[in-house]
Amino acid sequence: MKILTAVFVFIGTISFAQEAAYIIYTSSGKKTTYKKMVRELAEKDIILFGELHDNPIAHWLELELTKSLDAKGDLTLGAEMFEADNQQAVNDYLAGATDAKGLDSTARLWSNHRTDYAPLLDYARDRNLSFVATNIPRSYAAMVNKNGGFSALDSLSEEEKSWMAPLPIEFDATLPQYKKILDMLGDHATPDLVKAQAMKDATMAHFILANYSSGRFLHFNGAFHSNYYEGILWYLQQERPELKYGTISTVSQSNINSLDRENKGIADYVIVVDEDMTSTY
Image 1 (cartoon, rainbow, N blue to C red):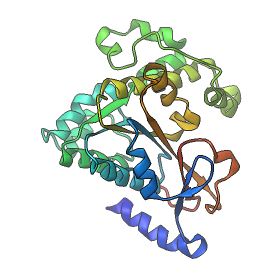
Image 2: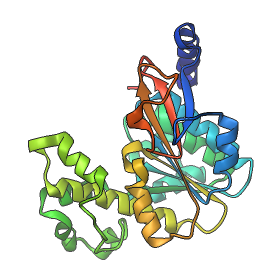
Image 3: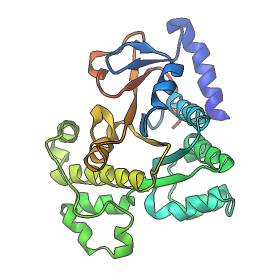
């Protein structure tokens, strides 16, 4: 409830200046409504919700969208924030075999899990929904980055390899988002860092498709993993181009009353949040 309280307090504060804490836009920059967004996303097979990890509006809307799509039936959830080798720990929590303390001791939870992701997991538990841990174990991604690229994973056991996308993965270093990583980090960036990012994207796409059969799959991930229809979505489309995909991104702007040019085209729907919004950590 703390996250919702923070959201409503700041909505009230910001309303004096901009009359809203957030506005939803289409890819082209046209204002739209939550209701219209839900209606159109309900027609998709797989939806990628790109969040800003510390943004309470994004986390609140993730839960609201989960409820809205669940009302239409046959919904599966998944998230970057849970690693594939922790799936059993997640399943045990969903089944009521362990509590929040037990989950914390058996899974590698993010530091903001209690405020930002526990509500999603609790909703899945209460509604008997599947919740898929889609990310590669972080230590394996670190191996790619620090130990020579994809070949560093060859030494892993078959069980360990089951917690990631099957090797070898397809990799396109020319994708703009991967090139952007190198540009942003400058001298600190290496080609292997981009390969680690690709390994995460490929693994999340792999587990989404491995657990999708019908209805809708709603996946939560950092916006960079799906912005500009790349990252996770690129891998999804390589494997299952016939499926219908929807994407959401979250951005922060000083003026939310129009979509900044650099934020146009990053997703089907762009949630623009006032940059003065409080953060969850």
